[in-house]
Image (cartoon, rainbow, N blue to C red; front, side, top):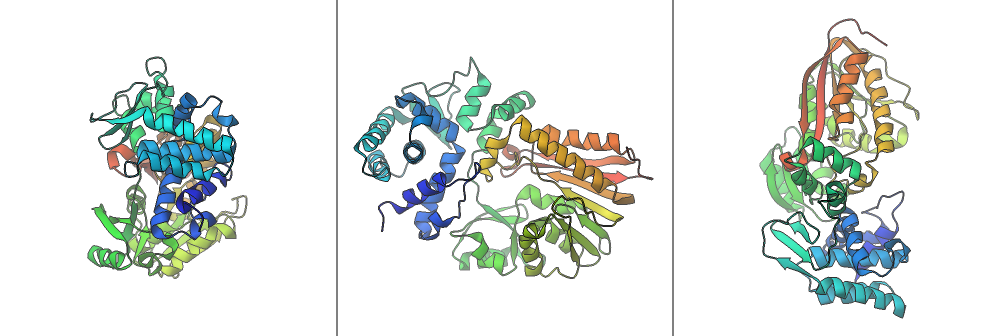
Length: 452
């Protein structure tokens, strides 16, 4: 067996990223035992969650630009700095020596990694203060754990507060600037929430009690961390696709805010409901449960490939009788025939409310991507509105906390479709929920649809 298999798997995973995304369950992880897989997973996700911070540290300790370091050595350095700063269980000397082994036999590269990591280890230390001050030297790395660097590693907050927070929390400056302005007293808590590690939250399906689900989870070798809302937080090893409580139809993976959406739609037995953006199907099956499998749910998807997990979830949970699949076509233009009593548009979005679990989404929060998403969202919402019967309900939901994708989008809809009035809207921030964030709005169509 190769030396340090968890670290090597983490390095291979980071090097194998495609279009900015890492495949955390890819082949590099497949042969690891559960303990090593956890270690590798922590390294990969830790590096991605803290990439801007790690590179800021490296810039202070390298004698060359970070981008000029060969990619395998650069990723090894990032893993090493992450471990030194965030890992309190492994001695610094072990982290340094293990990381040196990752870069092969090149004396120059081994010497570079050894020198840089030893300087980082020697010039940083945990300090006994409850919270990191907003300055260039201190980094909060966990509950009541603060590391101080001798060298100033962060941008000066007095000169550029946005750049300081963007670097410390690995967020785009556009995102940081928006919430420094929107949440002047809470932005620090929000940024910290965007980087927390979150356990899996499972919601029991109808007919399964919470105690029965907990027992099955523990029988499957996982741990129940807490009860949270209508679900349980679980620490499980291995891919969830093979986790017995899920494959056996007892539960679905669905976070707190996502679990609010179907009850917010409030579907009634016997109604005709459209789930316009159905895959992977968590909200589709929740709608079916609330309707007691009476009526019709049209679950729309784009192309057959996107329907695979949707079909698996519907069949596994026994909702074949009420759920009818509808392929929108590769361009998404083949809408089902209306009208519908209720339409749910759980649209593709920036994922800014769930950056703690969709880690790589943080790098895509830029103006071009938000403009693209808002154009897509507006088109979906307008077409969905035209399928709602008079007196019917339209629900718009995202896992975003960005205004342009949320309440501003809802207002644009009402400007374009005057027959709709806002019944209720909810915005959830992750630092307030302690879990995920997101938005939902329920609109009611009063009369004849006005089109523009």
